[in-house]
Image (cartoon, helix red, strand yellow):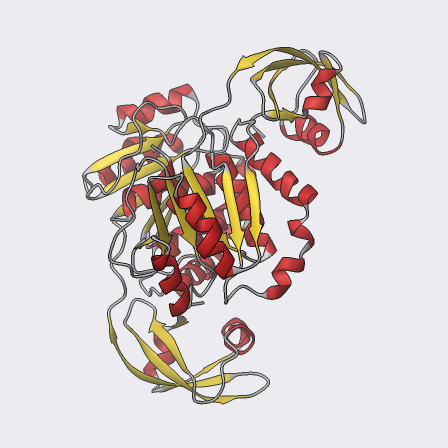
Length: 238
Length: 238
């Protein structure tokens, strides 16, 4: 936690904020904060600044919030679309890519996605929100990413993807062994990552039909989370 | 597991190999292999090819190994040096970067590394070997990486690092907010990644003194495993 993320409702009441639960535990046991210490804080979808610890007891820590005037860091200009992975992988993707600055996630169904993944509690709004907050706190960011779900491959590719592609400069899908190597520092891109085991041939045809270019990260099949971080590092970080 | 990794001793006895334990469980429950199925196999530090499942019972699966003639994929030309992270992070770094094709790991002490990390069972040869094997199996690779440990920061930087730098074209250390952005597709590089919380100023001075250039991955502090994968994707994958 490189920034204590506050909800807008918490700062509307005034300059004094009390933290309990996860944020209290972290500030007390990891930061080992003491009264008088400064902490970096930010407000969801708002600005960043400093707060001073005014009180710590066995249940909460109280902060006095200073002026929050610094903007959040600039987002990465990359839209990330991933075939819905199993829940632990979903959480790794959301946390790590949010920490890197990705602001637009799309998760979609494809043939090798197990249908049970769509029933997981991990997809509930509050669970997703918790992962995104962890990522923002890691990356000293405040701007909440948008996460969308697409339960039909065909509708996703033929309708949603076409709309999304109109908003970016380049669209790619990761494909093991593709001869076009992953470029770097492109302007605004979109990248589609398949499930463990990859896309089926008819899915590859549909993705190419929608205007996406296949790109490779070398001859090795990578786990979904490794591929996502690698693609964000190459296509997203300038 | 995209490749069943066999030990050299297992294939010296002949073309028939019996798998039990972890590899048996994986082939039976994840691959759901049946008698007659082909599996991709490789030998540690050797070649890759196909094997046919000849028997499956409640304890083991027997394979008949075909000709193993394909070479392992080319290594990434990047030496990765990381301040020793906590054991779960160490495992993520080893597994993911081995899957990406990194062959040279150096873990070193620095001021913000907790001394207890050096006592962890995770550093034992057999535990490290297990992580590397998982990475090789993911990346369809056979060439075992080399892992070295450096318990003194000063000796590592002033002696080991100087020797290592003579074998590469460029040497870098990752530093949040460094103005030089991470390049891509360099020839043969070395990169040093600090501990959670970063290097202390005197450590930065020593690294620069050894001839390393600071480089940034943007304004966001990243977790060690995210930074390592990002750097390997940018500096290592051509």
